[in-house]
Image (cartoon, rainbow, N blue to C red; front, side, top):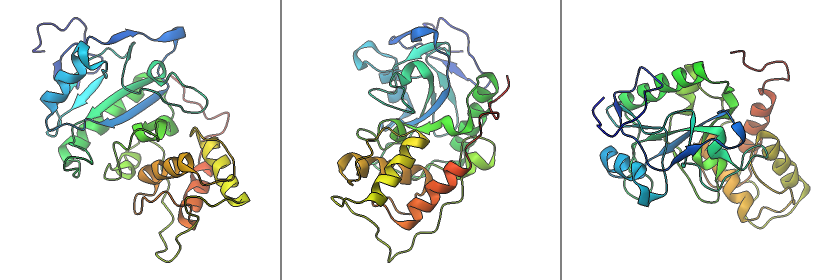
Length: 264
């Protein structure tokens, strides 16, 4: 390991470098990680991201950074609380930092040249995720995007992130999305009806933070967009169409039952 200020041991044998972050603290209420959270860095280089995620002035940190070539840097021990989720919500929980392990994946992001994630980088994401999941009691449907837990603020890692490929290799929850019908534009922002309420209730059942009002308001539009980025990336428009509803129904049907918790 090449950073002289590092003061912890790597949790994974896949880590190539340690670079200790300043903004770190104990997990609150003796919580253990039950969420694996994927981000993109939104910066032009992994080195810049590592600097920013490790310095005090940033007020942020994360557990891991993966550069475009697949090199893995660890900044925070998995046993500690990193500051990567921000104000967020999933399945009734709001302290997602205490409940999660965060992976930052180098990509400049939507505002600065968002591009596909290279194969070597995705291979490293897969390998690290498999290793993390082997050591923590994290269920597939709790491998999440930053946009899932903070849809009002975040859109990363975005629609180009290959969730299907990760699932095919044993990481995360996924079903084949219902194909998009180009003539079915669904319900739009501002519409109010019982079908919208039904979809809102299903999104809440999956884990999203949302009020079931029956109105396709701004909050619902953002949550539906986040859902589409993760599970129906062919068209991300925040509208509730048949493809979105069918994909959501399949995901709910594929959730584990009460007796299906991981052993370990």
